[in-house]
Image 1 (tube, rainbow, N blue to C red):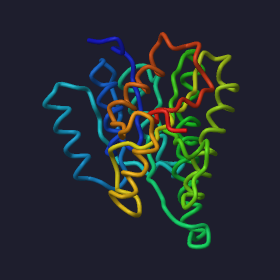
Image 2 (image 1 turned 180 degrees about the vertical axis):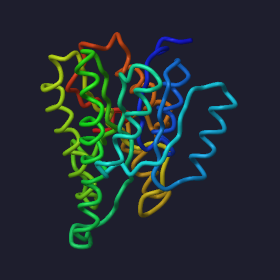
Image 3 (image 1 turned 90 degrees about the horizontal axis):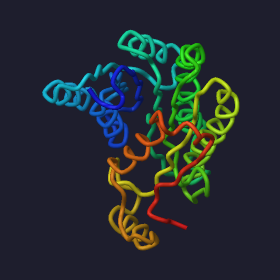
Amino acid sequence: MGPLAGQSAVVTGATGGIGRAVAWSLAADGAFVVATFHRDACAAQRLRAEAEASGLRVLVMPADAGDPASARPPVAAAEGGGKLSILVHAAGAPFYGLVQDTGADAFHELWRTHVGGAFELVRAGAPGMIRRRYGRIAFIGSLWGSRGAAGESAYAAAKGGLHALARSLAQELGPSGITVNVAAPGLINSGPPPPGGEATLEAFRAETPVGRAGSPEEVARLVRFLVDPGSGFITGQIIGIDGGHP
């Protein structure tokens, strides 16, 4: 039992650092969580085994976030496990490259995963929420989606599109009791290092007022707050979790 008991959630990208932390947080508070992954079957197996050992209700299943057909099976599984009330789109990956070195395929793949994946997840899950007149939706955005970044224009554009999607959906779905928000991290201790490795990370930490990177668990705590039943007056917000990065 827990504050989310009786509720179901879908978390995409649940084998990544942030996605895994979010899935774990929701399950620990009593939700039945359908956690999706795309490529990392080993990490998916670890999540499955650790959740089972901890007595958490987590169903791990493969899904390509950008494929419209892949959004419906996780939503159906979540509906079968309880009242689907939480959608979290954490699927995605960083991308580094100058604009002249970024091919069209890479650009479109970023858009398909980050923005298309969120759109398809909501398209599949929103009808049930609308019928029940309740829902909580959170996307994992990025500091760069709001301020842009040299060498990450394609990634920043995708995250910026995700932010705009969230603001629009908040207006569209708000009358049905559904909130839509974005947690927009800065430097987080997860995922592959950027070009330049430790030197780049150290420079970024030096620019951050708190002087360090964040953790996936800190992002998960923000998401957990946003999807809480008591957070119904917070919607359409892009909330930075970036250590005060200017």
